[in-house]
Image 1: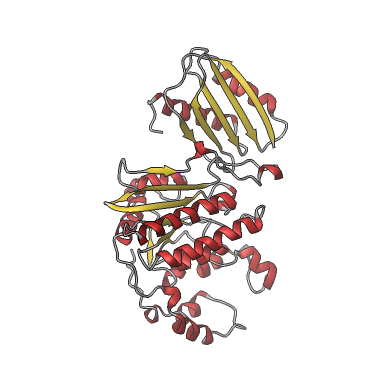
Image 2 (image 1 turned 180 degrees about the vertical axis):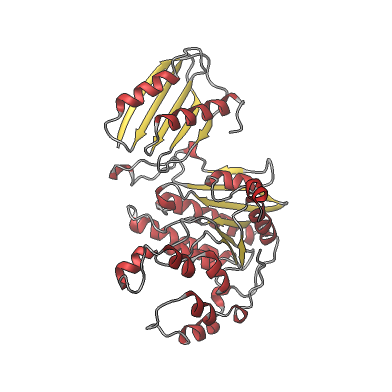
Length: 289
Length: 102
């Protein structure tokens, strides 16, 4: 990419969660649900002497994308590492459950989840985990009716219980800067030792959990540059697709076969992991750019 | 965490509500709503203790003009510098006045 194109390109990652959503939705269609002025904030952070955000770091909005009815849920990565608290989690779960009611009533609404999150908010523990479980259940129920589109773009990545939510989506769109993993690097290092995983080795971390690797190993359908317009094009395409007959997480035999082929004693390295996770077995249909 | 409440003389209530910023490192969230006629209020929640004098000086300067629209501000701060505070409040004020991009 030349310098002029780089300067022209508008970053998606640098936008706030609310700006990401308003940029995706058709002009004039955005209607935010439980906006910040409702002041539905975390009841737990204040008790622990931590400043709250008026929307608990989650933006929920109804609107259309190229005419398709959607509900967007965007997590603000700058607030508490995009962590999922009770309120933010319940906002996403509630939005998905309403979309499910609509889908069952024959009024499909496609969920678009912007998942920039370190996972559960430790200060809210089980309250956040309960909400994440509700989000999982709702995604699984919804994807029988509509595509559920997940998007991870920034370096906060998507971890913990929310990485499972990402895996459950019908389509997952990521950038090179994004990361996806069940445990973050420091957790792995703490549990398995620095020889197994050095949490300071950023190239190694991205080589294993970064967007490009997750795409190459078939865990995401679409790899996209951090370009607001390019990401919008991919999301617009994804929301217009029919619901998938077979989601990634239903391909149990292929996954078991793959897991059996892996020697857990061997230290993970990007090259052989790609080999072990050959994408054609998953039959991914997404495009890359 | 510290809380601080300030109020100021002002003009007629602002036209509409506005939002600026997020509660992220070095940033703050400003929620602006129309105030009651002739009076602006500012409620500040900040993660940084011991800087009430700086907050008061910065906000006093912003609200020095008693003819500005009356607003009720809620500020949730996560360690913003005075320059960022001024910028975010100005952003919210512009948006409420319909002159900014929001």
